[in-house]
Length: 311
Image 1 (spheres, rainbow, N blue to C red):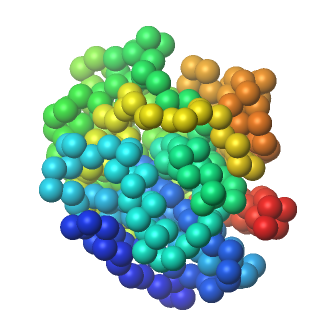
Image 2: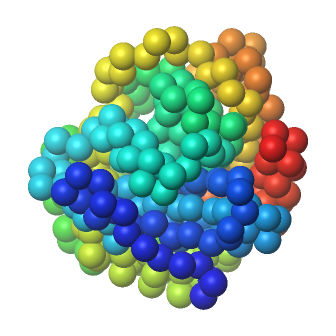
């Protein structure tokens, strides 16, 4: 990964970190999820650069090497959308492909709706397009559901605060690599769902964990808990909730997200095409939530085929 370069872009008063590789005229911007960071796209960045594209992966504000906002608890998805536009303008990028994973799916799709002239296509992993609206998790999932727990100010801070950043990332990677939705008992915290001697997934090395741990040691988890977990019900003034650009959804067949209420309809059902008419969906049968790190070659082939088709 030594060939990946790093720089900072000024967005207002913040310096946002960007990883970059490749010099092609067509640009792919990668948007990470949680507990991920620019590094989660390392395999894909090298692959698309090798195919003649320019790959860019920012750390969101308050994540990794990017500056934290002065009031992390007020950060919104709208801030991420504004940051993305500012990054494209600062780098003089008129049109790009967007690749989003986990909650990075939301800014990827919303940006394509708000700025369709700047987006050639959208590729998402792990989560389909869910039209913005009030969060309904509390109606279908128990109080111990990890998102409901992490939405409560102070609850996750106290849970995470018992461990160093590396251990928090380790535990979340292990939890999110399973096929079951992480749900704690009433008198149990989410971090307690992982025993200390649980091994890392085979495709995730101790060196990988050390990289993530160091980045989250720097940034902490304040902004990460605010966006996404405390911002899901944010209102967006969308001209039209339909995604009109070409789109590809890559899902792991064993991704725990697939068990969320309504997700099956948005991946296999008619509703998927209702909101994203130009959508292709593909499944990697043994894939989990971190499919791009677990099966990088397969994911790279799917991404490159989509880019070739729409370039």
